[in-house]
Image (cartoon, rainbow, N blue to C red; front, top):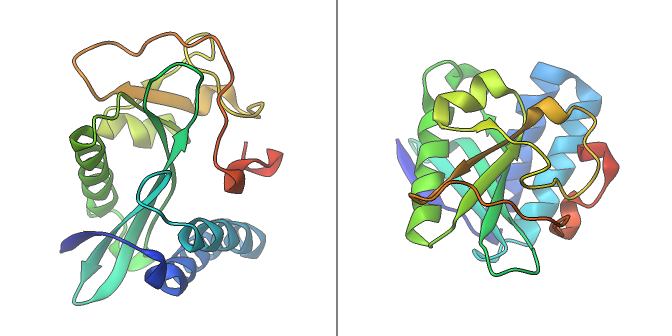
Length: 178
């Protein structure tokens, strides 16, 4: 397996992966929603505000994750992990966890302070995420399931309290994702 930082040239591959994974697991509507989101994110990859990592097996993309910057008025680097997809035939083999850990290590190299995500606590706890109160770091929009707001420090310091709602990349600025 080869991990790579992806660029805009991989937009179609990424979109097809996310569409197929989420259609199979959540249905056609969710597949289209996440396929479109991943396509929009991939079309705006800049390796700064929007970063995408992929894992390949025999030159075929079998997993992908995005990290997007959350902007605060104070000088702190916080990135949100979402969405994540691993092809159906490769799920349950630790590929997603390895890909997430690869991405988190790349963020540490970039001096990112905190990573957050919005998802299943039982899955993300396997890669170091813990429940995160919105009294510490708020989500960019109102959460429909607050128990899914998770975070981890990427430094030796604990997650700092930030008393403001961050701005997210425009692709996530819609209530349907929250």
